Amino acid sequence: MRADHVAQTLLLRGIAGALRFTPRPLALAGGAALGSLLRLVGVRRAVAMENLERAFPGHDDAWRRSVLAAHYRELGRVAADYARMPELVRAPREQVFAPWIGEEHIHAARARGKGVLFVTGHFGHFELLGAVAGQMMPMAVMVKPLSNPGADAWLWKLRSSVGVEQLPIGAGVRGALKRLRAGGAAAMLADQDARRDGVFVPFFGTPASTPTGPAWLSLASGAPLVFGTCLRGPDGRYEARFLPPILPVGEADDARAVYELTRRHTALLEHAICERPESWFWLHKRWKTAPRTRGESAFDDPLPNEPVAAADEEEAL
Image (cartoon, rainbow, N blue to C red; front, side, top):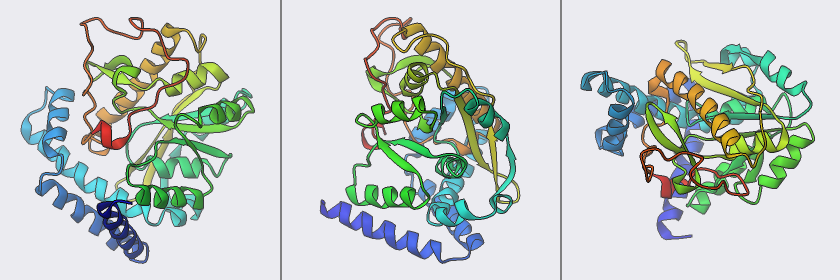
């Protein structure tokens, strides 16, 4: 590894180890303070403010600054909870979640016998949601390796420790498809800029290049999409919510079907963000790729033969 990657990995392991053995209330407070510090020193603050201005033009700068301050604090809290994710996953559900809503939608999707494809965004503690849902049925998550191999190995080990199977984006697509066709479950994120490989669907009123992976897998397997969120509640516990399944209509090689399914789950995410704007990851350049033409959509270019995931974090930021 590069020297800076080694240093980053050692720092990550040291902080995670300290947080895991710190009482959770103190760890969360420390995470919030660290998040506030990152905001004060300006880490991607300009990007976040630009995104908020685009998404919420009807609000003033004071409102956006307030949302952003809360966002940085929540990022720090979520980071603090990563360190103790095995403990949170195995704890009695009522200790970690209040409420836990919509489990019947998972069972309804599963009863169709086509598998269940969970989809969400970089919103709240999405990793914890997938890991806990994975206690109900074997779960595989589609992941993109981090640019730092040491940090990537740490995160890989953390996911494995809570029983989550990991499938790399690209090579793991066929594994996910096989799992779904056998009636299993997989999970994907689909809310980061996919460059020219994505489809442009509306997101806060602006076309945004969006990964086609969830739609493609759903259409190819017949698995319903279940959108879920995991957001912090007033008492510090998380509020988990699963929405009714979206049933795939059409074929995986049908551009219109892929576009429509992508548009529908993206609209669900937008609605959730409007309710809890502080919980979405505003630090990413979500609208980095602009349509080549005013009317560009999924129908202007042929779809790839396999699904597209979001760019890796380093390139996408």
